[in-house]
Length: 271
Figure 1: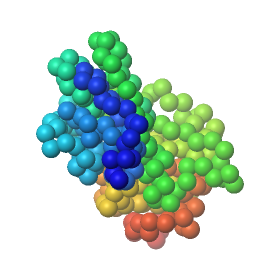
Figure 2: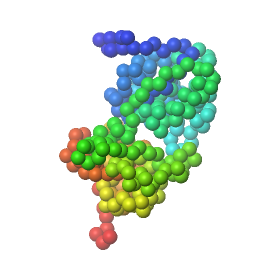
Figure 3: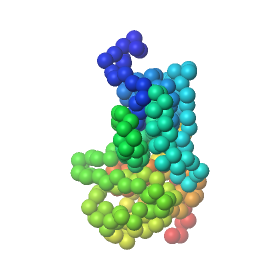
Figure 4: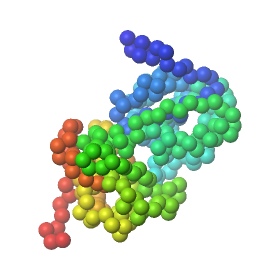
């Protein structure tokens, strides 16, 4: 019965690379194309954010290569990873590049695809559920709600050099998007919240930080723009995390279907 699920799906050909999104964490959020790729691959080059449960679908003789990629921690250089994919494909392997979330949403999948194209290596892209949508859904926070917002902005909190991207127009983001979803933003949360408030966002606007989204270790901190930096320090949270700003955060009071324990750092009575 299980094998029937994969009937009619594509076969991985030797000498090809599949860039596959594994979703935000919960193995149940793998797509059928992703699961099908894991079952067939000779070599799986996977990121730090790929849940170990996803790798259990691999063949017993498949080679698993860890590629790291965690912000602020020692990890392989992106160029080296991309060229490793080329070498494996040229060796005739069925190569799976397994990435957390979606490979084309702040996942550097585009860079890897360009390298494969440069070296004439055939590839396929399998989208995954990105953490900025799936992770927030597991926290009971919809990224859109017609009574709250008709647009949403996704941005990253740091660039390839580990600093806040200088090409983000914070004034436009603050004034043009009712809901802002941020990847990799915890390290620079003080600067980011300051930028948003200076650009016109209300200091008491709801904000949430979802750590280890969709996994058993999921934690949710509800705070505000002005309290975010201090609350994160008190809570002692660490990445990976998704940050969301906007009134949709308030919907969590009734939509927290997973009943994740909320973290409420103690605050001074006198502000």
